[in-house]
Length: 253
Image (cartoon, rainbow, N blue to C red):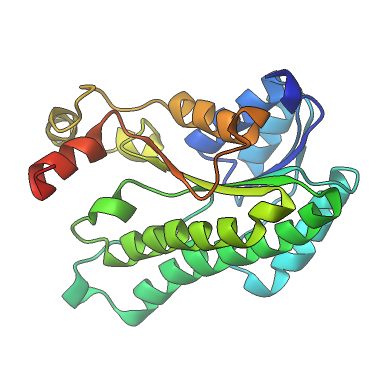
């Protein structure tokens, strides 16, 4: 997409499979990218592998340092921020009656509260540009719920609702806030799943396959481009029809 050339983009959670694909897509389209994450060696690989990539290791759980992170990241991008992709997140799965409060709070703090702070400080930069794109990576389970993930599903549902409110607040400032809800995507995490369990998952997906990280990255690219300028406060589902099938089964749509 030609309009992404020379755009300045921050991507958190860049060291994972989905983050890697997002970096690749932006690089191929000539964007200037600040890749962030906690695995320094993976970030170094991104810097070597793709063009126009700068790196800034950061753990988004450090809430008190997020403003400095956005300042430093924007400075690395020559003082202008056009887009931020909030891809970082954690899980601490457990059945609700076995989940301790620390497991609940940690996931909410990182996935919801830290994302809120990243957005707010990014918006302050974007207001100077009089435009901006904010893309939050959520999850299909933020819509459906999931066994053993009451903390994670709550955090992702919270991001979705928060994004709608922020979209309303800043639409007149030409800032778009949207979400992408991936389903089961091929990553290092899904590679560890038992093959029989993966077969069960695939059987519930109308497209009859797991998603590729590139599927999510393509959606990110669209929401970052001018082609999505009139889309705000929305969630783009990238799950091979899994959410649609769930609605049909449980909600009788």
